[in-house]
Image (cartoon, rainbow, N blue to C red; front, side):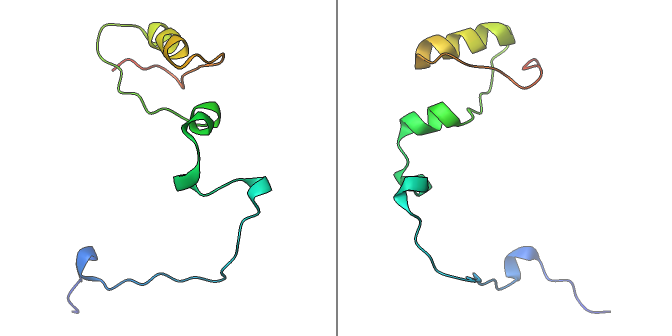
Length: 78
C-alpha cells in the first residue's frame, strides 16, 4: 500500500491562467483599498464578550464607526 503524504510535504505551485490589469473604475487591489470602503461594504468579525446583548454591541458599533446601518447574522450569544 502506498504511503500517504502529509499536506505540508506536498510541493505546490501557483497556476496562473492569464495575467491582466483591473480598470480602476471597477475597484482596486485589496491591499490598496481604503479602510472607509472596508467599513462601507465589508464585514466585521467581532468576538462579542459575555454580558452585553447582540443589540447593544450593534448599537455600539454604529456609534463608534459613525455609520447608519449595522446588523448581525443570527445571535451573537455563546
